[in-house]
Amino acid sequence: MANRLRGCAALLACATGVAPPAAHAADKDGNYAVWGVGAKSCYHFLQAAGTPEAQAFRSYVMGYLTAYDALTEDTYSIGAGKDLDEVMVWLTEYCSKKQIHSFEQGLAEFTVEQHPQRSRHPPFRFGR
Image (tube, rainbow, N blue to C red; front, top):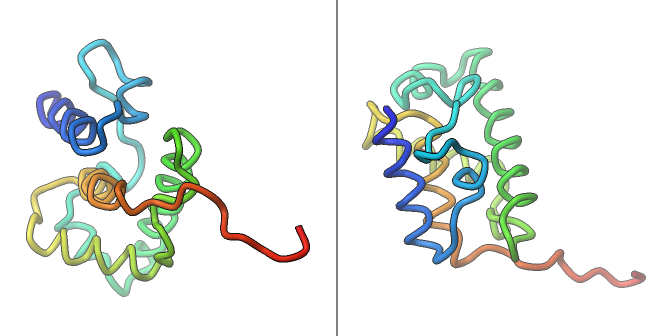
C-alpha cells in the first residue's frame, strides 16, 4: 500500500510539474491516510451504484476536489467546467477498467488528467 501511495504522489508530481498537495502533508515516505469511502475499491464503488451508499461517494468526491482546489497552487477548479455528474461518469469509466484500485486512486488519476485543463481563475461575472 505504501508503494502505491508513493507511486500515486510521484505520478501526480511528474504529470503536473509540481508536488501534489498530499505530498506536502504526507509522512516522510509520501504515505498518507485515506479516510471514508476513498479507501474502498473501485469495485465497491461500482457495486454501490443506485444504493444509498452512492451518495457517500459523491460527497467524498466533492470534499476531495474542494481540498485539491484549495491546496493546489494556481488552481481555482480542477474540474474545469465539469459538473459533479460528469466527474462521476469519468470515475465510473476509470473504475470499470481498474476495479482493484482504490476509489481515492481514481480521484488522484482524475486530477492528474485534468490538471493541464484546470480553471485558474473564477469565471468572470458582470457587476463585480
